[in-house]
Length: 435
Image (cartoon, rainbow, N blue to C red):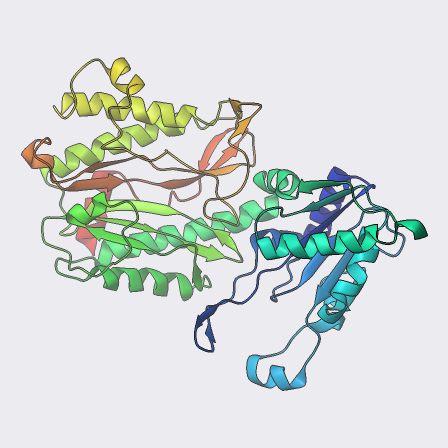
């Protein structure tokens, strides 16, 4: 992203909230892992979207039409002693010179200056209810303004959650965001293909996990978007299995749900393939059913279709298939109405994708499923999870399959960003046999 991209985003937000409002947003803080060790820092997605500022504990204020400048940033000051231990800080100087702030102040001035930034504004936008300490601090600033009412100060009378505006803005991706997400998906897709080529019976799940992360990191995507799932055999029936601690048995499938993060933007891909490179007849039957469901869902991922149509299409294919396999019995329409498929397909067919792997934006508007628009990015990820249960015909017991792609909605139809990794069963077998 360029400085112009961030400036454009802030201007869009300022226009949306209007000249009588003010918006404030804290950055993320470092989190202690144990003793004096912290987790690797990741900036708040909302804060990153509006500023690109990479350091913890900063504060952003956007005050439309403010004479002294609309964009105010509070941040940690330069500190040579701490920088000796932890690395260089941007400080107030960096906030002004590198990140385009109209004004910048050290964090020590936050409590003094914030009431002056609130004075005269009618509406206050901030992340209401996210953190009780944050709510208390904001109310303290508002009370300070109210205490000066006899001197002509006026405090905001209306509090509005910032997410109601900002998250809708984030939902439609810009060309620059799409380019980043396309690249992230390509990196992850190639890493999945690498795993297919190198998987062998009795390798450890953790070994494939490490191979995926290494493949992404060596081409520039050092961080993953979420903990990888590498689930062999019946462990694939556990949706968020992340132990990744078992060996991969000859004759089993392995389900791998993994994606890199590139400059803050997530990819999210799942592939399921045979550990030994050959699907059994039963595995191929279940896999093909899930693939047909995904294809049906992708056909509905079109501009003007509503959000739930891909899910409805996938459910219809899966339910019909479960009847044909003898796992369900009855009329497909009635089984869908009764949600009889849910013991075997218990999640939705997709979610928004962006700076967060489960990205922001409403799925409904005015109580109705929202319509898909060009620039939205979502996953399409049907699955079947047939636990080793006596109610399931013996050949299919313990088979878990999910197929997931990252999809950009365009005026010309869906663009599958993750298309570089195969999902046709014959293509998967050919790739694995080449090694």
